[in-house]
Image (cartoon, rainbow over all chains, first blue to last red; front, side, top):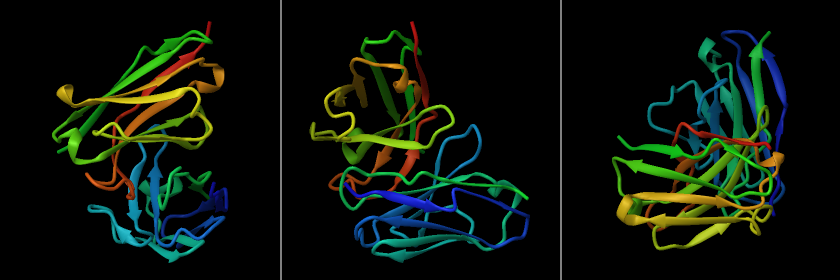
Length: 107
Length: 121
């Protein structure tokens, strides 16, 4: 099965910072990648699918890029509500494995 | 607006079987694939498997021997059954919408609020 990794596992940032999270697949998954945000105590929320398509209603400060094995999620200007854990998930073929997550907290 | 609502027993004894149900409101179960995901306390997300209204399923290899998913189209709901549970199965279990009516290859765009399962004697 394809393994998903994320880096860093956690990061500290300030409001207004540009934040980049990386997700790597152990094999080529084309662009079959989604990003989710999970605020503490809340349900995960789909941010981006097909590696770079913004889900309806998601602020434009979120963007995704990449294909094949290497992907990034970028938050152009971190807002207070963005302090959360972010997960990638591959869905080119089952099992649809999640990455281990990246926690973004206050510096 | 589509809403999903999980239900379950809350507390289960080790070695027993836990059954969870996901009720779908605002859409037909026939229009999409549907997945189960769980999250152990303080841990990340674990995708468990998906199912289709036709009865087609895919289970995560790590749980395949203990996991069964089923559908009740008349009730617009689907279910998860996990046998021989241990403390490691303690988690919040989520149901979510996956893909569309002909393909599961999409992100999970609608989630339930989750139901907590605690395995303890």
